Length: 426
Image (tube, rainbow, N blue to C red):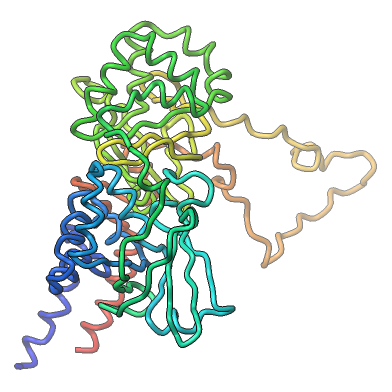
């Protein structure tokens, strides 16, 4: 290649990094991997039909217990609904890495591992766990924690391994679990307010039922996708006096502000940051937005007034997700942000009159601050920080680019610096 053309490659990479237009890149695609093995086509089809494939692809570490077409035929003969079948298949997704080598070197000969069924919150107790046992002569078996005496299934072979990220292994038959096979209602048939009332959000549920068409608006959006955030009773009780002072329209907006017209699984919320619209945004001149931020397994929702943390999952079944939160989401359209506290009163030592103390014949010479002593920052107190009017500023240095994309500018800047180094190298 001509030397003058060399910089074009890093410059193109720099453009792509800064454009923010590239879609999220996953470490693997389970649908494509299984498509290369026709003997698992039925299993692969139902991973996609139940939307589990997307959940699997978003995982950093996962093991798939795949079953052949003939084994799937036995499972399908039970005539389970798609939502019940999703629970059964989720039991076949281990949220840890178990390649063939790891299976045959189990410490102590056995281990208990969690599954995607357990992670969704649909499995009570430890029924969403799977036992893995290494027997003599190297045979490995799997069984659900609530197998009820049903014989375990056996490891057959390794299908695909990406060390410590993805393992796809074949097992001899589907795992049996009475809890996973229990009838599961379709999300569109779920009574949202009844579910909330039974799971610690009765006050909020009662307000949905008694305020205009709030409950109807929630239910009407389930078919196309809905994510609701339900403040626990303790948080609502403290907020009720303020809620009662709102007008009828404001009360409705306040409740609709706690739902998003898109289905967000808990894993998607844990992997994205940014500003999102709510049901209160539709058809209204004001934004009624809030910001999703995550720190590992902790997901927080930030308005310009309050911050709430997701504390539990009531349901997470596409197209419906309902989560409990520990505080009420207060939109800035209805409530004013908390003002910064007044500055601390001036001390005697800081007063200009301090040098006139009669105990000293001469005012002491000013002492320069130590070189290693940091100066006080006006931003040391979070309450003193100015809240920008643009909702995108609340994303913690990230700008919303639409279609579920967020650009992390500090990361982009670091990447740009690396590319710049490459350009100089050329």
